Image 1 (tube, rainbow, N blue to C red):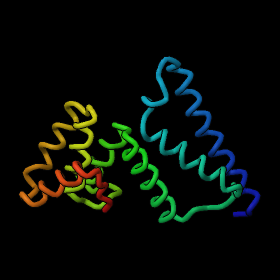
Image 2: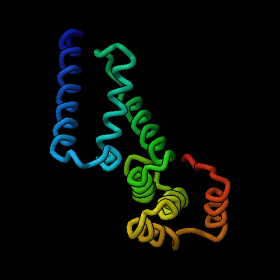
Image 3: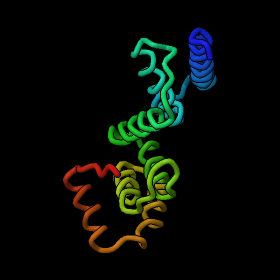
Image 4: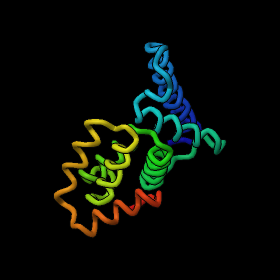
Length: 152
């Protein structure tokens, strides 16, 4: 593709995502930004980083896009975003886009439960618990007590 066409396509995609985000915020004006779907937050944060780089035509490789997506999601989860914690836990549990790791999934479910995650966090923690040894469970407890974040 010609560089000018890439630049226009990139601008078009940003405009469409911006419009989608705008429509969602207008359609539910009473909904605070914290309650918008986590996927939209990750997309918005990723596109904001693209815009800060100043080169709208730059095309990231799939590996770069995945690394940025994973980092943004983990940062939101670490900052206490409940839906991001549950998303990260679910992805570690199932192995979708993150390596399957029951111990790390259990950590994120437990952390979400401690943050008021309710039934979803409790059910996730109960699903991952039987797959862990006593040593794994002690490690998760140590991570929670010392506020250590396990990155796989």
